[in-house]
Every structure is written in C-alpha cells, then in structure tokens.
Length: 136
View 1: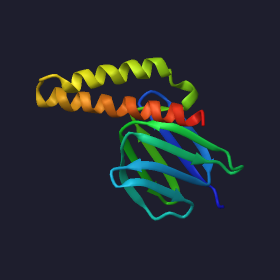
View 2: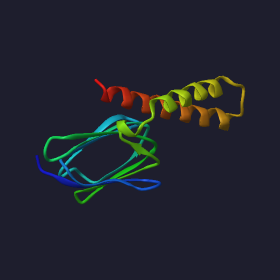
View 3: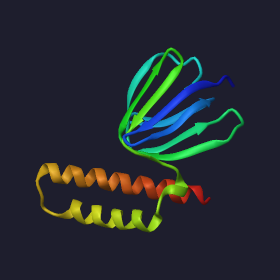
C-alpha cells in the first residue's frame, strides 16, 4: 500500500506525525477510511476509536474526542480535542468518570448541562471501550 503523510494534533500536543498507509476515524456517518490518493475532504470527528496503520503493518489505536479531519493534496490533518493510546488510559479513572457522567445525565438540569453530561458520558464510554479492546 502507498503511504501518505498524517498529522494528528490535539489541543495540547501532537499525537502522531508521519507516514501511514491507512487511517480509520469515527465520523457522524460511521467509521471513515482514508488511504493514499484520497480525494480532498473535510469532515467531523466524533468520540470513538481511531486506527492508524503504519507501513510495517503495525496498527496504532487511540480513543479520540470531537474534532475535524481534512484531506488535501494527499496530506491528512486530524485536529481533535484529545487522543489517547490504550496504555495511557487509567481504567479506574475512566470508570469513575463514567459513573459521574451517568449520574449527571440523570439529574434534572438545564439543556446545556444535560448535553455537557452526555458528551462526558460518550467520552468515558469510548475511553473504556478502547482500553478494554486493547486487552483482547
């Protein structure tokens, strides 16, 4: 497979910069795959599991949060709030965040607070999914 340049940047630091042969990223329409010579594209990224396949066949997996993906002239740029490898995720902390988000979602609150709790819930579920999937 032909490699292409990929830049995955978070709000805090670069997550990955280099060549890869494929990228699978979560979007509102489902998982979206990108390979070399992909047409130009801009789309939304939602919380989920991102997979980067390197030239040697190694697959890097990460839990990503909301963001955007842009493909332009063969280069791919992913800007996300957070990106965490499974080994970086503290499972106990993620479980506590999940419990708190579930409690917050169940409380009577403003619409804004409800949607913020829903976003925290989605992030916690995603982090646990990526962490536990890595162990299989």
